[in-house]
Length: 248
Image (cartoon, rainbow, N blue to C red; front, side, top):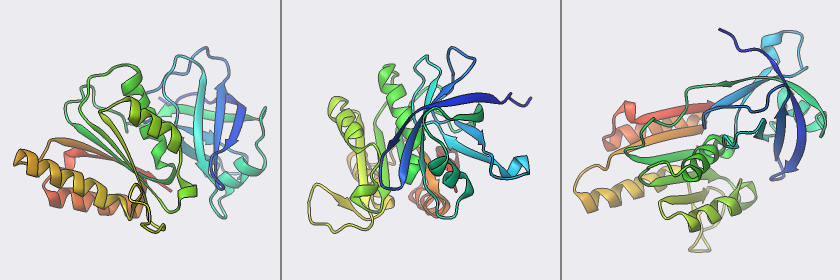
């Protein structure tokens, strides 16, 4: 059964980077908007005569907190009708039509394995939601590795927040890596996400003498996801250990 369209009022907008913006949306007519971390909402934007060409879906970047406010983090796409409208026309106080929550890119009921959250760009949104949800609710879990790939330092989303979370919670590791920065500072990882998870898996295999049980959640551009799937399976993991959400 199709979900009803709801009205969302934009109550706050914040530039996160030069091309990325955070939108806080208050869902009207409900006291709370319940969703599972990892799910998304679909916006109906006035950018085309045909309804299905107006729809744009975005993962919820906030976590369930019992309120009717959600956060979306959106990157401005060159020539993109949807993001051009959101960046140029939508202001605080604007209303948007939305439907959701939707999607099955969610955590397992019981977290019995290490979690590798591998993402690029705004693909970090569902993992920010998942990590805070697990830690806020003291959900039993193993290790969480949030491996975030971006080009330059200025593209890094939620950096200070996730670093602070890592310092507070030993089981959570925030591992950003930058593909277009020089490796001048030993504290900064450069290169692509694949080297990061492969290094962790190799170290764990040395320690344990066997492949360590893990679930891999992949979110971002298709090329990254395709390569990650191939590499993870080549290491010896099963397809069922891999969960993905494509962007773009």
